[in-house]
Image 1 (cartoon, one colour):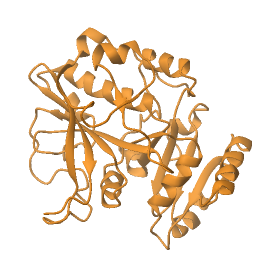
Image 2: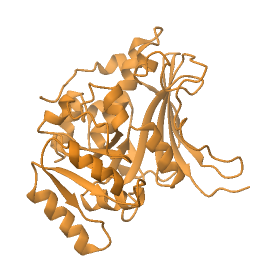
Image 3: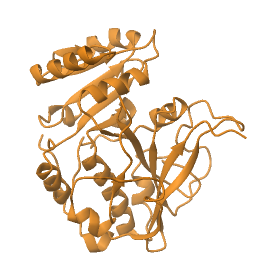
Image 4: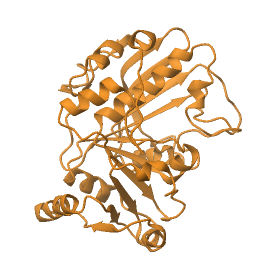
Amino acid sequence: MALPEMVFDAEEIRLKRIVDHTALLGYEEAGFVCGKIDQVYGPLAFRKKPEGRPLVYASYVMSVDGKIAFMDNEVGPLIAQNNYLDPNGALADFWILNMLRGQSDGIIIGSGTLIKEPNYSGSAYDRDILDARRAAGKPLAPWTVIVTRSGQNIPFHNPVFQCEEVPFLIATSPVGYQSLIKDLPKDHVLLPVCQNEDDQETIRRVIRNCPDKIAVFVSGNEDEPDSSALMKVLDAMGMEKVLVESPAYCHHLMQKKLLHEIFINTSCVFVGGQATGIGSSETPFLSTDHPHCDIVSIHLHQTNFLYTRYCFRYDVMP
């Protein structure tokens, strides 16, 4: 399987920036140079990477009432694609995901993402972003990091597993590993827990010497993996920016205070009912203890799409 590519018309998806707090909030680290990003989105900057772990951001499109999927068809992109008033706004939503994939060194997904979205590519589609990524010295595709408690139900028949350009890391629990090794389609290599510089060098050496094997990281207790330990391993692997595309894991990282930013694109459609939202299957936050956000930027496309970037603030108490 070759990585898919698309041509995006910059004029059709050009966004209007109406709020910009990047300088105010200390966003001084520029992403790689890409004229397409400047033309469509404007300057894209980041905060400095934290010590010992990557900068972690998530990206989703949701309805005006906060749903990320329709109940009758849970493919996430439909929230944007089925906004019939503004097809180019929906394309801009998909392009922003491309932009964030292109800037990332790793993409975190769950097995559910691969099941619901069988066309998952593990990469950006935009040719201009891919060219800029190559020019910046990055590999064609970021790592795909699959997080799984149970180690089960990973659709290894998905074509992305046959794509040589996409490297994989599966992060699971001790219980999940016992299930995982029964289903792995090819040889794997175990990465150690990262506690010191020697562990960092071991991780880098293992990755370097085993390019054809699926990397596996086991952490935590019983069926609960350790997300903090995973972040240290991703950092040791050289990942400076990581994109989260799993809604459940996004909520989990907020609970652990490990998610730095979230890009939420609002498609002006209404879903209602008990349709899925971010973290709707997880334990909700309390009225007295919950994450807060600063608005980093807001963009518009026509009158039908709103694109908002937030950075998280934890431990804000009454």
